[in-house]
Image (cartoon, rainbow, N blue to C red):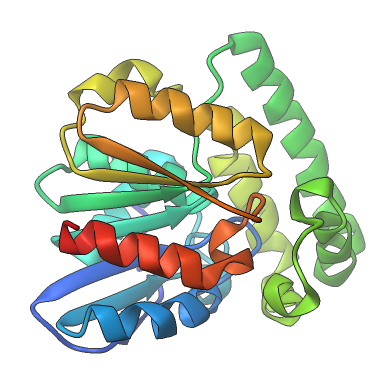
Length: 257
């Protein structure tokens, strides 16, 4: 595997003997974690938090990488740590957990998926993502972000939680490249590998997110060392909608309580 030469952009918050690495979802940046980190820090005082910009996003906007490559880049900047990923970030963390269990001490998946099992449906998703990537480049980031946030998936986000301005700091080229190289349709399904993942895992999903609640329940049955947390009054972006509840759940998991 040949890795891109451009490293992933990170910011580090706090210092300690433990490390937690956080990966955002599509169209976000590393700054999307700041509210949750503020809530996690008091309960995890001996912890260094590393916030990462995924390829095509934020300070990593010029980096183009598929999911396996991104997982390797992630471990190269994150080292031995707990990894938390949301949506696209969760898919990257799952790749890292399976390929680099030496580095991933534990992991938290928020609204993640091991992929689309049907080859036909994967091809359809790749085609629809290619159309979406073309549209981003045609209409520009701001118009695209408005369309993206108008989806039912994000309907429960307040303007403050949606962080539109942060999302608009991305580039149309970077977001389009992310869809083309790391979209869900590009991902080889990992369902049949879950049974060998022995890493302690927390699955978080919003109670209103029917699709991903079903996915999380199935993952919980297949992962040998996992627990499932359903966050009340939350949709797809549970960590943004109910940050305090998610912070408490993650803190308890990391403290083993």
